[in-house]
Image (tube, rainbow, N blue to C red; front, side, top):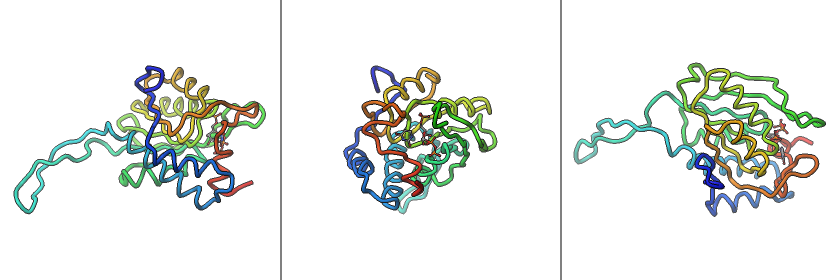
Length: 213
Ligand code: PRP
Ligand code: URA
């Protein structure tokens, strides 16, 4: 819960905060950065997947037959926002290996900071699936709002957004545009700078995950 808003969760686990401190360090190299983004995605995913529904089926234990819970319903979809969102996918798949994967390609125009779409491919029957949109950075919120707009346009209804770091502006913008979606944040940082980078942040997530620039 954030500012009394039920649909926003700021994750408070000390392990997550510890890992995030390593990510922030400018001397953390690509390999370690990638591994830690994946681990953080797992920790945030553990919170975000709490509301998966279960159904009961009989299991023969060595001692008796017990009715045991299994995840119910259509396989959920994980939808990374390209590129940096790709870094979180494996972490979520470790929790939910059977999930389907969609992709949304967006980049921020370097002058206007507006998101530009270049790709969108979502799993079939998206209207019947729980959808977990992943992107490490929620800065102005433009990319996240556009991604959720697309998913809704294609029929998606049950949507959750997971990010490693959010700026207050982006978090508020996403919630105002889409108050129905649940948002899970690894850490709420202080502010954006004039280039719309998050402070203190971790720099450019895509470049640090893929070793570009
Ligand atoms: C980054 C990040 C988000 C976006 C956040 O992607 O991964 O998608 O910026 O900024 P916003 O909230 O202001 O829209 P970027 O556009 O740098 O593309 P990349 O993942 O390809 O590096
Ligand atoms: N995108 C990033 O990768 N980092 C930021 O700080 C803001 C947007």
